[in-house]
Image 1 (tube, protein in one colour):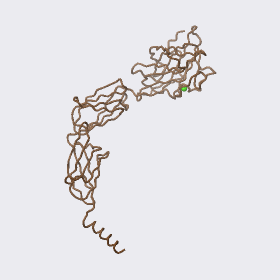
Image 2: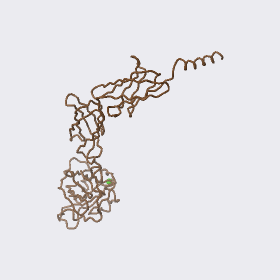
Image 3: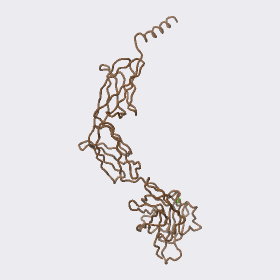
Image 4: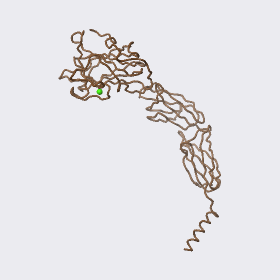
Length: 367
Ligand SMILES: [Ca+2]
């Protein structure tokens, strides 16, 4: 008992007499303009012996503890295509935190943000950094990229949808460099979902519309008895024998850049339900003035029952109301869903009322 108590006293005394308590070096690794350097490896070295090490955090800071004394600070940074090093010194005092900035000269950080049409953040399929010589660093599926590199002139080749490749020349100076690179690519969304629509020829009793079947986001299954098919008859007043059609209009709620429409329709040949023969699309911002685009014929291939009739609008076509003139192959038209892709970020508020639209006047209907 006495012996162990003595031992404790000796140990306590030893601490204060022979070993001083540790202190901390708070080391900030920066570029010449103060931009923090993340993920830099930092070592405290005494003579040639490594005492402790760490990696800088998102603020470019690492805290290293060691006994009081003077140390060499060694910094290693993985830059593009090369390892960059820097050295400095720090004096650590017992129980204190010493702040030390290590500034790395002649190094740059390049932060790139990709945006598409309407400044919407874009994920590029590939971004390739080049320096005009042998350097080539590719990154895939990114919306933001960051490089640590030597100051100089670089180029970035970006492709967003596989087809559109743009090359940007970038002058990079020592310190932080932020660039926003804009690609002529729209981010798409189906704006018809949940929206109101009207059709000229109302659904038949047997295949009714709850009022939202065509924009509820659900595509019905095969067979005319499957849930969600809205059946209308193409026959109507004033029509020539053997010509069947329907007029439909969707209210997107705001003016949009319309890229593509898709009409899901049923072909069940044995019961006389055939695919759409052709579609004409018209756009309007107020529901009164219409821009009518060219008719697109649909030729079905294969045997699937559910067909998708795709209509691509010319570039920069805009409207709040999207009208369809549907040429049918037979008297029956079974529609299950309407999708209208618009460019995200391009909406603009406009006045209009879908109920006030005269559905018979949009297209020059041949009687
Ligand atoms: Ca549906």
